[in-house]
Image 1 (cartoon, rainbow, N blue to C red):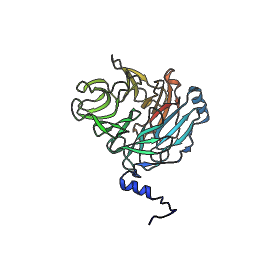
Image 2: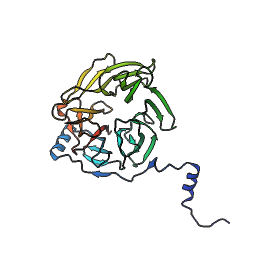
Image 3: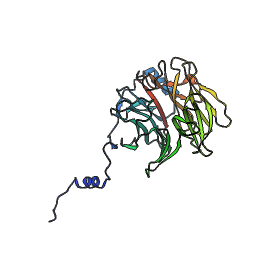
Image 4: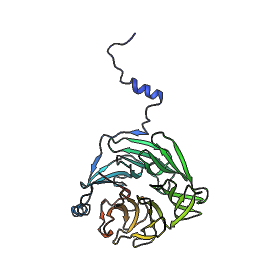
Length: 335
């Protein structure tokens, strides 16, 4: 007998679950809105930030443990409004804006505490900034980056993997356990203009920062000593962090052809231990973190800085004042 005038609200979800089409709760979740928190920026510093960034409309995201565990936060400019984007008992870090600025890809630890030095116990997630929806992108992945609007790269073990967000297909494009590196790598990044060129920091048979030519037998191009090798947006130059300078580190830069390494940033003052450099897509604005003392990436008091690279670095401004660990920022310029 056919029931009349009755609705079964559970029927469709149950059917989807039986068919395997419903998303697991662990892999996808939604949050209705972001929690606005105090930025902690003193009034005098707010004035300095607005003066140094006049005309800039942007958002800066980074990982901070100001709430206890490392969560993702987003600061808008010129409003200087700070919002907490994630809330869980895991470590969220290494967030990167999608090319259209509507999503963040990031790494999340597989248990409540994982050191940044342990790159094997992480998963890659994607956060929709319009809806607050989180989506699991890949298990056992770290250091995710956008390659295009629908494709990301990440490190899985010692392999660099490309993954399509549309099809879900994965492809390993480099394995550092074999020649020529025969060791471990970190922060792998494909050139924004040539997918055959891969920037890596390496430890093992070879130590330092290198560009790997994937099209020519993984031929190595040594860039120098240090870590955190990354590309300028034009793909013609790279920057990295070297263990020298006023605070124990400094930021280097060089064109790829020809190679001409030079000191780019060695900021005067107490916050001169620079790490986690990231450029805006037009190459003008740089965000990074620096510590006055301490070195450990996920424990020391690193603070976030912003610099208009057309001006002297002494005019850079500080964006965080919480006294916790702030790291791996990214910046997206609003149109």
